[in-house]
Amino acid sequence: MNEINKHIETKAIRTQIERTQFLEHSNPLYLTSSYVFEDAEDMRASFAEEKERNIYSRFTNPNTSEFVDKICLLEGAESGYAFATGMSAVFSTFAALLDSGDHIVSAQSVFGSTHTLFTKYLPKWNITTSYFKVNEVDTIENLIQPNTKILYAESPTNPAVDILDLELLGKIAKKHNLLLVIDNCFATPYLQNPIQFGADLVIHSATKLIDGQGRVLGGVTVGRADLIREIYLFSRNTGPALSPFNAWILSKSLETLAVRVDRHCENALKVAEFLEEHKNINLVKYPFLKSHPQYEIAKKQMKQGGNIVAFEIKGGVEAGRKFLNAIQLCSLSANLGDTRTIVTHPASTTHSKLSKEDRLEVSITDGLVRVSVGLEHIDDIINDLKQALQ
Ligand SMILES: *Cc1c(COP(=O)(O)O)cnc(C)c1O
Image (cartoon, rainbow, N blue to C red; front, side, top):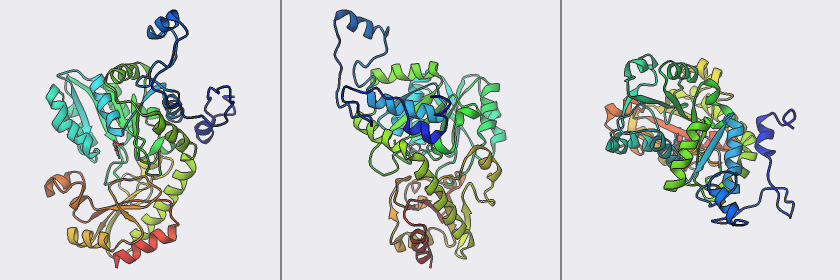
């Protein structure tokens, strides 16, 4: 079986499932909060973890286990735990592994709520964070302190689509005995596998391309079994578990991940190439455009460039707003990784509370627009952008 079942497309579809007496072909949905025991001895042994079995759906459930098993296969991970959202995966990972007094070194460009976690909530427990700019990786080692425990980053970054060299981060983490934790949300397990470059843990918001159809929230952390064990024990007691229904949806979504992401990337590259030629545009950033500052690194660590394109309209904030108002087909929404193409203007929306200087620190210029390229026909997507740019 292992010899045949070796490609990511096959692994995402042909995961072993335990069939019931009905011999179902596709894994059924197990909407049950708890499980029964044969007798007192079975109950004792189950709680003592002498056997692997489901006890209560806050701990495990067949649907969440199927989802986690698939992500582990795709990422090359030993073990994992599934969460209600991407943010509960991020929070629980830090909360389970860090002690008061510990320190994090993080890329400056991270997802907004992750940044808020670092600046507002973790300091409550005396956990502090130092930041490096994504284009200044040579400063990382200067930020490491005796109490540094985790090196954290996303690649590609949001919303500026910068790329961090995962192999380099892996080497730095190893040299200084740090845990390397990568939020791999923008790449999906299909395009990039950080464990291969030395990551100890990989986090996903499954809400984005893994669901891919804008339906459910979900998250997952996978990686080294000893670390996942800590994360599992923390989560089993604090309750951020993914619901069986969402897990069932997400497991089905993984079966089509490769074909969907292939088309997302094909469309995104065409959008990037169209924008690069347009006279009202200053700059286009897409990892697989030769003009991207980290093109070589992107090629080394990613299968394709992903579905997010960032570009800068000439004329600053006002031009950005006008462009958004002229959009007809695409959606104005804060989500990404949907079948529907989504356009956002970070300077006037998600990042409007930051000062102009703070925005520039994370490469958000006033005219920056982020497009999450969807699965509509490429000509229709480009025609909408074309008319809105005029
Ligand atoms: C959306 C997102 C998250 C948070 O995921 P939710 O499912 O919305 O909680 C974390 N990291 C990145 C990179 C994201 O894009």
